[in-house]
Length: 191
Ligand code: ADP
Ligand code: 5GP
Image (tube, rainbow, N blue to C red; front, side, top):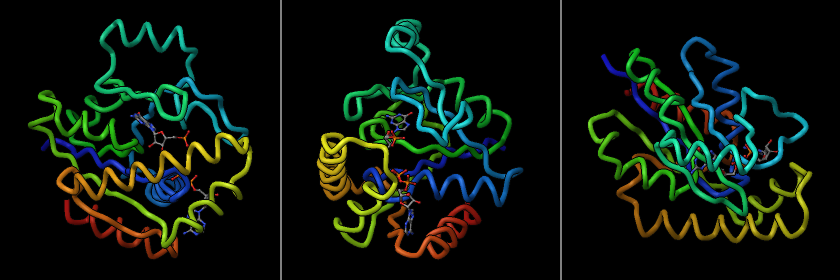
């Protein structure tokens, strides 16, 4: 049986990466991460299991070679999903998880090549905008300019969600992390 793609979508700071990392820690044999390609700088706690970090020139070459299922500019950097980071898992019957922004999600949901594939999208939010801002600030390492840009882009992502609910299979609020994880595990158990 073919595997399922599970995407986590939501404004910056809602906890998408932490949720995926916790799932992988707890269920390393069950949770496969689809590694995104990006031109953004590596954060101190990150390595090549988080992202394939590329220069802009390398990224543009990958676009020209037709390697991406989707890609998008997010707050000044490119992020993309290569075919190679998803299809081999699905073909082997494995579920594969990834974090993605709304335009990328839309491209995947609208893609003819993904039409026949199983895909569950989960929109994640915080209990309030103030909490989202606190989390972005406490995570650290961003300039004030980038914090503001991420908050603004996050507001747009929420607007996209409310205008396009059909692209999303589930909506969860990550207030208490363990409870959010439990809700996601219930979704995964139902696949
Ligand atoms: P995203 O990937 O959505 O941008 P992160 O996973 O990096 O967000 O989380 C943003 C920050 O919020 C991190 O410092 C993380 O530890 C923290 N965080 C995540 N979930 C919770 C939660 N339920 N309660 C409090 N802090 C959280
Ligand atoms: P960050 O820089 O915080 O790790 O990620 C910023 C945003 O990039 C995330 O909110 C996530 O939604 C988005 N993102 C991560 N990987 C991909 C990808 O492969 N494609 C697209 N379109 N967006 C991605």
